[in-house]
Image (cartoon, rainbow, N blue to C red; front, side, top):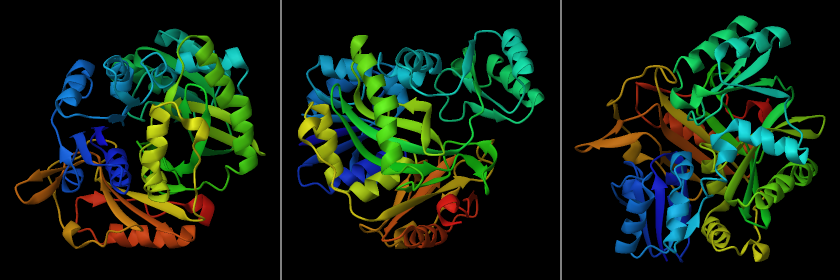
Length: 421
């Protein structure tokens, strides 16, 4: 089977690594890829948000399966163009991708099916939004309605902070994503991520994880795209997962079918869990990053079989075979991230790393400058490891991170703190 993966981050590196563990993968191309991906697969320079160009590339390269990693091509309708060209595609249509690209749309769906989520209000201008905040008080959550690379959520502890976030969003600080704003009740509890494959009809849970969104230790500082993750998430027990499926995910999927936009791909539900009861924080229509890295480490070769079954509508007969193990990933980011940060710094020590089925350094924002690997983004590397316990996985992940010689980078030292104390 010839496979094309769209994307160039740590998520896509881990998807590529897992696909290559499976003997059914004959050829693998990743577009655009990165310096790490280029060591295991062919990389291609194409516009991944241009569905017709991607379809043409697939025809020229006899591609059998396309795995769409990031949210931007999904929102742009690339999956629609590829399905129209007769290709097997892992990823939802543009209509179904609105579950991530519009928070207001998700709230509308939740209201239609009675799915438990935060109370909210939707605004198209700053004055009314700030009046709502003053009436509700703080803490309160301010969200850019559109796609903001995981950074368009402000957990405001004061009314002034919330009003400043509203001004930033409507003032263009988050681009087009902030043209509309959703303001939500601040939910209490512990947040975790639940991943479910959906082929339009069947919902197949494939794992849980817990991300670390804030840049600072102890979950302090501004939100990021994610500074680390581990799997499984102890708070998301089998009982909580069953409740989330019956009260939130399956009703949502049924409503999408009713509206003529059946969902196909991975559905990532961010859940707030309190006293064993889950409420929906948000949906994402692709694997989380860095949650994908820990899921792929645990799933290994079977990930490709599950993705292929999802793309072809065969999930009813599929099953996940979990080992009794744990995985953790630690993000190495450029100093200054998520604010202004430098690019082009040289990263040394990568060639000497031990990488196998229990240790992998997944690249995110890397490129080549001659023989050197250089940082090209904010989140740059993902030190990822498996272990029989979470502590063992943590020790291996940090040993991998500490073996990298990169003075311009940093990482949080407390990934997994909720589970490990």
